[in-house]
Length: 259
Image 1: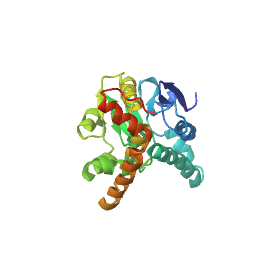
Image 2: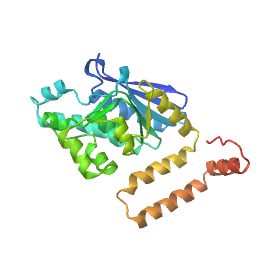
Image 3: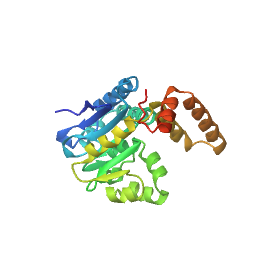
Image 4: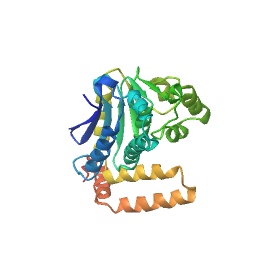
């Protein structure tokens, strides 16, 4: 079977499953294109309020397909560059997608698989799952935004260690560092992520979209600019119908039902 991205849904949550059984869910161009398309459709759907990305067969992703990479060495460099652009288009689509995206990780999340998980807004991981930036083990450097993400979620020295030495790091260690949001027992990552997504689905979509946009901008913003952005988002959301629903429900001790 070729690499593919399976798409299903549970309630208001879209589930995207990395499926490439022969190569431990290694990523590839077909998955990248399907991922971008799936998010584009989900963005315009009022029925989808969150997304969970997981892996088939009890593991997340072994990263790149080494056989394909080796074959690409015999082709013009532009061929591999186009493939990486496909991955990067998907990473950017996840980061700019206005709805929450959760990674549900079982087993290994290696290389670009680790980068993919880091691109998500939150990570749920089985306690025995393993994360590794294995690029340097085969004389390569990272892609998928791995250096960008790691440099923002952990000290530079630790990010350098993971990237240069290619050592494995467990989910419990990443949870201690605040990179993994929630730990669960093996086999429970998807269910735990869907429970988290269900809670998110009950919140006002416009407010969640503002939070994600503000967080995306925060790293490159001065305090003055960020304060102005927060002001503008707050005013916009205050005058959204959902604010009326939320405030009224709170004052009347009711459960809000957002549009």
